[in-house]
Length: 89
Image 1 (cartoon, rainbow, N blue to C red):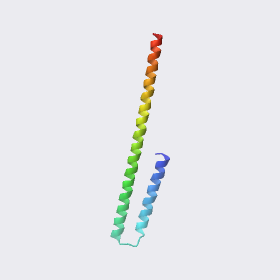
Image 2: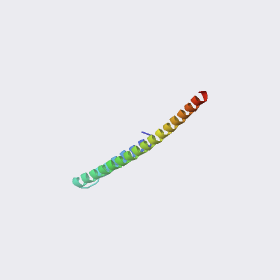
Image 3: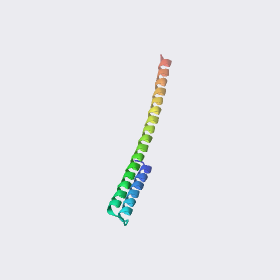
Image 4: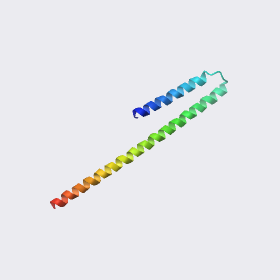
């Protein structure tokens, strides 16, 4: 995980902890508190899923660029080898 990913993960964890503590210390009925906590955890889960999807998409883009670059280099190398063989034949 890169530094940006670590920062985002730490930020999300801090937000979840802060929200949970805020809800737990709020002067409301227990059922209301549990509902709010459940909603907060659901929102956190959604945020984590979204961030994971973004990271997977970035990884796939990087993979495609690397494969394209490698194929291009291999093709250039093959062309150079073929030229060299034709010159010495």
